[in-house]
Length: 281
Image 1 (cartoon, helix red, strand yellow):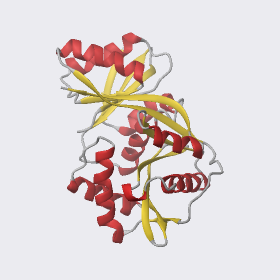
Image 2 (image 1 turned 90 degrees about the vertical axis):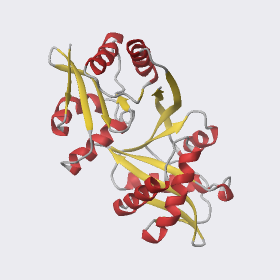
Image 3 (image 1 turned 30 degrees about the vertical axis):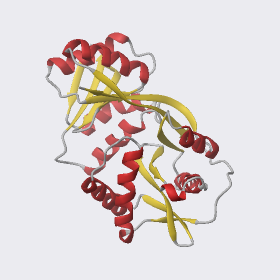
Image 4 (image 1 turned 120 degrees about the horizontal axis):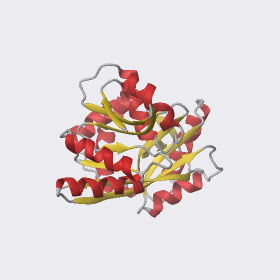
């Protein structure tokens, strides 16, 4: 068994992309980040792209874009010994591991091995479900229209992203929210559901994979909740993504949030995988 970490997205793609594409929606985070690295070329960001080979065949992959958590691939029938070997590799090479996310089974195996090696503690940050949509169901749409956000919406998006972070248990500082908002606007990926010219809900088209695109940052302020605005916004953007030629949409949800999970199922999303996020103390 050989474990390798490379800094070249091209090399990693050549080695591991075909493996990740076997469960494309489940691996939308890794594939989406890889796609960004391939598109953006050289970057000052620190990232690690790892894969495991047996007899010159790649059987597992993992990656990290600092300062974020490590990500484990969703791969069928991966042996426990492979996950343990990845943990050993990170430990022996003094790689920083602030946290990890990935499929529940393999991520739990990693956490058990990592805490054994480091004599540390781990806590569950979030349990998630991964959804895929191939066709948008006919759902009741509220009055309003989906509009692309622009620079005039920057202050509003910044405020909403901060609030979104609080609700999602992911702290987003004001400065980070402002940077994220301007990136969304510049990339022309963020949309608002507007009712009589008033923005009432937000949704963003995030990462792209070979055949799909991911939706995230779905947020509705408290004063506009329970009126179907998020359902309409997500349904409209999902339909637009499919009309643009993608075969499917994907997204992550908080497993403990029955409202969002119910919304997505109504629209046509179905569960294809699970994920768990751990942070190490």
